[in-house]
Length: 155
Image (cartoon, rainbow, N blue to C red):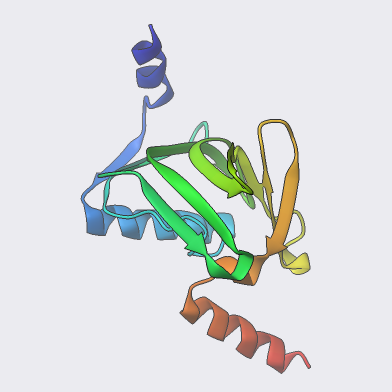
């Protein structure tokens, strides 16, 4: 029965395969949603899909991956498959992502940018508990350089 739900959820999806195509697809998706490119640093992607009508997306990697975000001093674990529902400045009902808080792995179910001008990204657990970080902490080096150049113009 569960596999029927997965098939239905992915009906009508645009699907891409292969590391290069999936990487390109995932970066385009993050840019379209208004997120920094480094917020989902998935490795060795093999499949990515998106159902535009429902906002459902998924990304599959060859193996689970752990990433340490130095700027936030946070370790994050990504399962083989990461899923969620997307809309501008938000990814909700996420699966496959956990953050290490003290000694516990805590699932992350949502990330959002409440106020794009506020320059913060909020991550929430399934219990609704959230934590905000500066958006620049998840930017690639190129994005950070452009960000700082733009802000220097406004001074």
